[in-house]
Length: 124
Length: 102
Image (cartoon, rainbow over all chains, first blue to last red; front, top):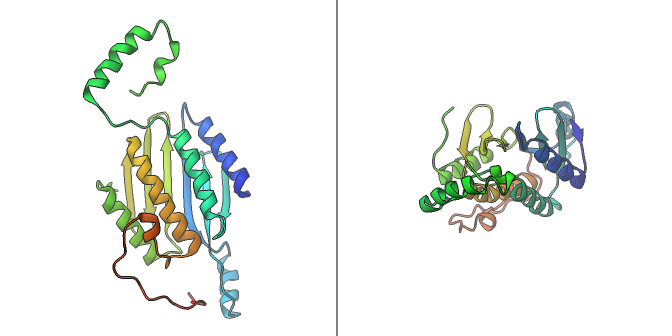
């Protein structure tokens, strides 16, 4: 597990989304964490120190694991960037269906195949 | 595991689960581009809540849930999320002092 700073993490996450367009999945996990082991935690508790909790974000495409810690100060900025990435990458989800439109799209597809070979991106 | 069908139900129960065991609960998003599939999971390894969709409009809703969880996890489970959810919270818990031990 590679621990990254916020921006490199987001860049790496974008790469993961790009690499999994044809096959594979991307997992992103959020967890409330103090980033301390149990022993460290117990030590701090006995010492009366306050544990600092952050949001641990992990991501994987099944091959590579990356992670980052998002604190109170950065979470809003991170959240906004993260949302932008998701919006830009999650393009294979279905739009709200309109019956007429769907039929029309299918008809169009057949006609346009000769002109534009890249019509395969149309949602099935 | 059975998927929860109602989005609102899923959100409500996820937040409840996190608040009940903040240190154990994780929130996982899985996205499969090739099949246009999105699965959300919230679990504390005892209870597991899942939601599956292929609709783009649900991704928008997920954005809100992401914001809720980022806020809760970065600021702590006691944080008031009414700002994020846009819903008014009727019973606001009394504000506690700092230094709560766990």
